[in-house]
Length: 424
Ligand SMILES: [Mn+2]
Image (tube, rainbow, N blue to C red; front, side):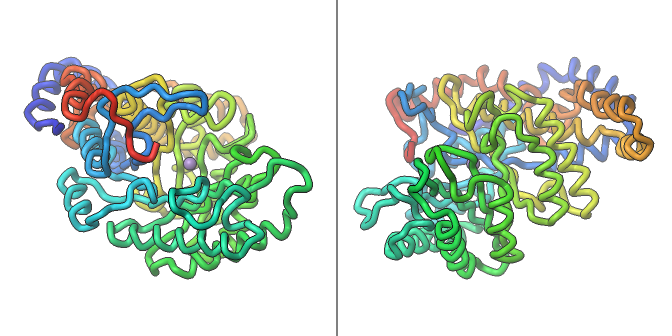
């Protein structure tokens, strides 16, 4: 299904008067509203190919119907989101779930929807049919050299697929670790993993980045071989200038101060990118901003401050990706909500009076510092974000348009009720 431009225009026309009233009121009270709008329009968030269908949990999976059956249909779905919000102009693929049979045709299809390919993701956390060696006891950390070689070769193959599509980064997330004390020699596991990553790193094209993603626990419950940002930073530092740490918001122990982690990684020039999601307890992969929008805002505060301090381009110098899973919502509505939440947090962070905040910090004026942050956080920036969408050619109310167009009903008619997104 494709969303025709006139449907978006009709939708916007019906809401325009009320929107303009709200936006005008807001623009008058915000210094530099035009500058913020430009940044919001440029800021694009990559949609992961695995989040377009119902994810389910290890207990069960309840399909919503009309899920994409192929890579082509996944690209079509992201194109649909991008047409509606003009903020999802990239897709992040997962190999082997999304191996393109004809890369140039896939590239052309994506370009037709205005999409580019963000980081490609490798998979050594499950065994594929016909695979020679098992990853049951890890991949790059494995005691058997043949298993390690298989994992290295797979990652290099993922880079090759990414090159064909114009991607410029690989995200390596390893499920390696141990479930019980004594199972693993930590030092040897680290060393073997480092050596494997070094071989993959050596295969990176000159303009590529490698993102080393960490995770505190699960699927291993006693130790993870890339378990936290310190370990990831250690690998990335030893690997070299093209290696970076990737922060997935759900991959920390409870109450971790993620904004502080972000600030330090940025200061070290080692923050590569983000996997956005939200959580209450662990790696819950919930809709971005659904549980803790204040934390998201505080993270964006550090991102904006830290990137500005280093003279970085907000929209292009880090990888911005969603990594979520949807069990009870329509995946596409969930993704529209996630993108909106990210843009709202970003817009709020852009409103912070950084000079005044810095002065309050220098004066140890704690109450003032809090007032400055929360004054930005408590500003309803939705008219600003909607104005950015409108100027970019998107819809004023993405979810409303999605429902008015009966997108899901159309997709079910096209693809069937019982489809299962490939890879899930
Ligand atoms: Mn992730």
